[in-house]
Every structure is written in structure tokens, then in C-alpha cells.
Amino acid sequence: MQQDCIFCKIAAKEIPVQPLYEDEHLLAFLDINPAAPVHVLVIPKKHIANLLDLDKQDQSLMGHMLTAISQIAKQMGLADDGFRVVINTKENGGQTVHHLHCHILGGRSMTWPPG
Ligand code: 5GP
Ligand code: ZN
Image (cartoon, rainbow, N blue to C red; front, side, top):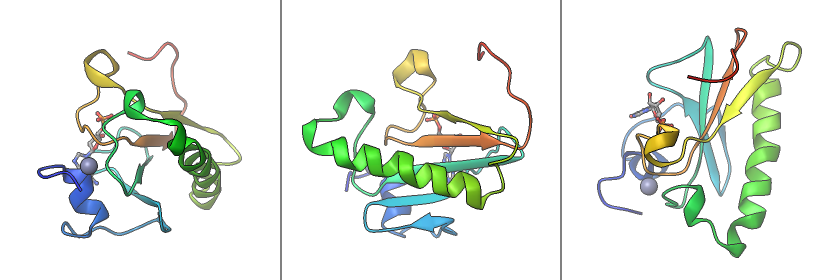
């Protein structure tokens, strides 16, 4: 747990959260400022700042995360029309919370390239 990390506090339930999915390693919850009709955040419970901080031992965690995302997307009703998964990384990626997280965005058509 990293001091002053809002997602560590959410993972530790120091900040109340309504989990959409939870297991030993992951927590998924709604984004507080949704960018789409369905906007879910999926975080590892352990603090990893961003994709650049992954090491070999995190391989199974990240595979597990994608598998969970598939399940959550179905659970949220996104399987028929599709959805987008985003991992913003550092300044140019638009990362504002420095605890690794996947955005699941759905419920509307997305544009490409992203802004
Ligand atoms: P980033 O810009 O780092 O990729 O995404 C961070 C996301 O976390 C943003 O979409 C923002 O709305 C969301 N967020 C920030 N603080 C909180 C919070 O306290 N609760 C929830 N549910 N979402 C948050
Ligand atoms: Zn953290």
C-alpha cells in the first residue's frame, strides 16, 4: 500500500466502494467521472504505478486482469455491441492516478484515433 494513493485506499476499502467484481488480486468499480455510459475501472489490489513498473512476476496478474475484464464486460452487457479497454500511461498517455488501472468503456460508439 502506497501512502496517499487513492486507488490503494479504495483497494483497502478505506474509501468505500461498490465492487462490480472482486477477487484476491483485483477490484473493479465504476469511474467517478464517467466518459461513457458504462465506465468501469479495474485495478490490481497491489500498488503498481503504471505499465512501466511491471516485472516478470506480474505476468500472471496481467493475464488474470484481461480475463476478468472479459467477464466484467459481459456482466455489464457490453458483449453484443463491444467496448474499449484503455491503460493510460504517464503524462502523454493522460494518466492522472498513478496506480495501474484499466478503463472499460462502453455503451456508445468510440472514435479513433483517440483524442
Ligand atoms: P487516468 O486518467 O489516470 O487514466 O484515470 C483515472 C480515472 O480515475 C479517471 O477516469 C477518474 O475519473 C477516476 N477516479 C479518480 N478518482 C476516483 C475515485 O475516487 N473514485 C472513482 N470511482 N474513480 C476515480
Ligand atoms: Zn496505489
